[in-house]
Structures are given as C-alpha cells and as structure tokens.
Image 1 (cartoon, rainbow, N blue to C red):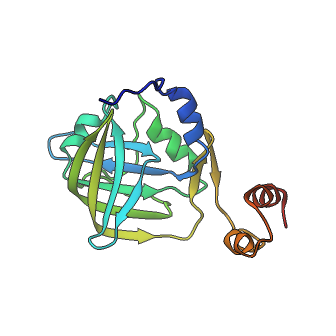
Image 2 (image 1 turned 90 degrees about the vertical axis):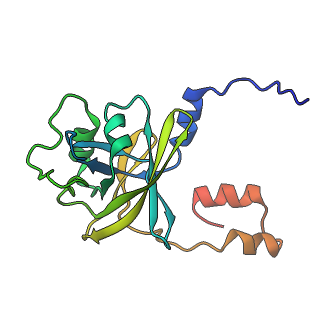
Length: 194
C-alpha cells in the first residue's frame, strides 16, 4: 500500500507559476442549431497533430457557455492581433453583447475581423479532465493575415514583435565543451552574455 504525505496543491501559487508561461490569446466561437451563439476568450489553445490536423482547448465546467460548447459540432478559433486587446476583453466579460456587429449565422461561429489567423474546426472528441472539458477539433479550413499575435503572461497582455536579436552560443555546446555549468548559463543568459 502506498501512502502520500503530500500537502494539497496551493492553487493560487500554482496559477502564479503557470503565469510565467506565455500563451497566445484566441477567441473561440460556435453557433450550434437551436442555441444562441457562444464565444469566449481563451489561452488554453494547443496544437495536437498535423496528420490529421487536430487542435484542442479546455473550458471550465462552470463557464457560462459550457453547455453550448459541450453540444457544438463545429467551432472557430480567431488568434487575436496585438491591437485587439479590446476584443479579448469583450469576449471575456459577462453581460455584454459579444457578437454585436459580427455575422454569427454559421454553425461554427464567426471569424473575428483583423485576427492574425483563424481555424474552423469540426468536433473530433471531448474528454472530461478534472474541472475542465478538453474539446478537440479537426481543422476543416484556416487562414492568416499579417500582424503580430497578442500574448498573455503574468496576468498581462503583451506582444511578440521581433525575434531574439542576438544569438548566444547554444548552452548544450558550452556544457559539453566544459566551458560553462548550469549556474553560469542561467546567470549570463539573464544578464546578456557569456
């Protein structure tokens, strides 16, 4: 018999730790037959497979649009541009008309105008995981536009406008050559150079 003396996870501290991992910001929409259109801002989007083209995201069971997304057969992701924080806020707030000015007549929901990219998906699978539902979709259509993606990290929005300007020697090569250790690499990478 195996016993664990582990303390329960401090979810607030865990959320803070997870906030150190930047994510993209997307709006996911759907408009299944017999339901009002639903949409929400998410940062749980992830690519799963290229063949077949599968992507996924997670929705909390207590989310207001949970039942609609649970019943949807199609949905659309719009990856927001760095200038679309107002769209992210609009689809994150309760009690606002999220679809004002958008054509939400199709079963997959609308593409947000000005988004960097969009994916239209058909439901592939749903998996209940903890307090969330993982929704996996098979990509049926997609498109891109010029721009820079909106990102979220540490509880704040930001953008990715340019790649790293200066190439540093690869840490694995430095370690293998005996020219550095992990402490040196971590300290100098944060400070600007070896």
